[in-house]
Image (cartoon, rainbow, N blue to C red):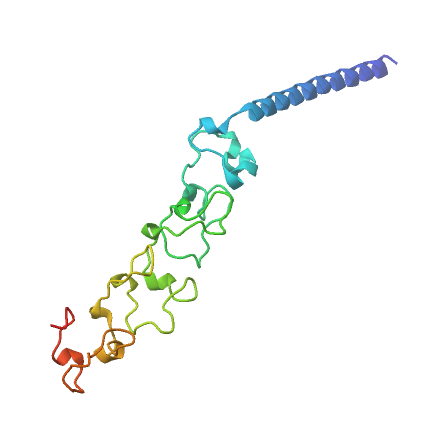
Length: 202
């Protein structure tokens, strides 16, 4: 009888200790959530905006480490990082790792703008009418070096470079696409560059 009573007492003591431990764990969790809910992330060097607002803390702060988290997009949004998140797909245009130069924090698409200073490929690697608008069907026959004539701000106005022209002078200088022979021009079938240079007619 004494053994059974001792056993019962021991079970009661263990149960009581486990309840005290459970209460302690719950209290700690509650105090942590209070700390977290009162924490102002804007006081750090990384302001939570857009999609980052709804991400749980542990996504960026692995194993409870809060200091030293990456501040640049590529610190997390790159393959092989310790943080499981999205990153540039293989078919992404050739750019630097400054994601926020083109993208907003609330999502990868739609692209906010394209900062051409961060693009590392040639114009034609994007402006090929598949990824981005390229030469229209009625474009003058030229090489694919867009920046010889165009700026990255807009297609027009252009500063035409004859070095990139692939066709004969009269292909463009026909009075429709570009200035051609004026009415008082001597009759000739010779190409323009037989007598003229690309700087000026005279």
